Image (cartoon, rainbow, N blue to C red; front, side, top):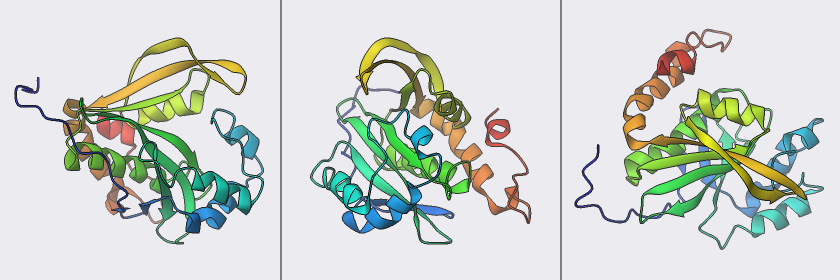
Length: 222
């Protein structure tokens, strides 16, 4: 167990750019609005937003107004996910519920469009935030929370190495309905073994000429 006798509050996350091999994360700004709107305009967009607190954007102007609401806040700290090959915005995600005194924060507000979902940029974007939280800022715990009925999000949390910690019943009112919230987390101790698994999965050698993985992240974590 970590010795906390000399513990001090951790720095707050900042509006930094986190560069990866397949994507980068940039602090979300108005200049991302048009590209993020395109990423958020899929045929199945209602299903993709079913468990998000916000509604699908109706226009670029609507997206600009939504982004403007995060420009003066440090929590949540929203990032645009940029697909490296195309340079297009492929989604968004945030660091939120940030507690520097105890070294705890959450990854949330996740929306991944077709360029990222179930592809290398999505996994790398989580890796970049985990590395920033644990290795750069020195946090002790990163959380993942989702609607208890959101099966894809629950599966994603487990695939990314978050451990299930329980269901908080009647936790929120969401879009006029009850939300039971499933809680997952990675601790600093977990991260010591997860980091090399992520890096092995993200290595170009783990993918064939068609971009298919040779080893799954879950296999590497196990």
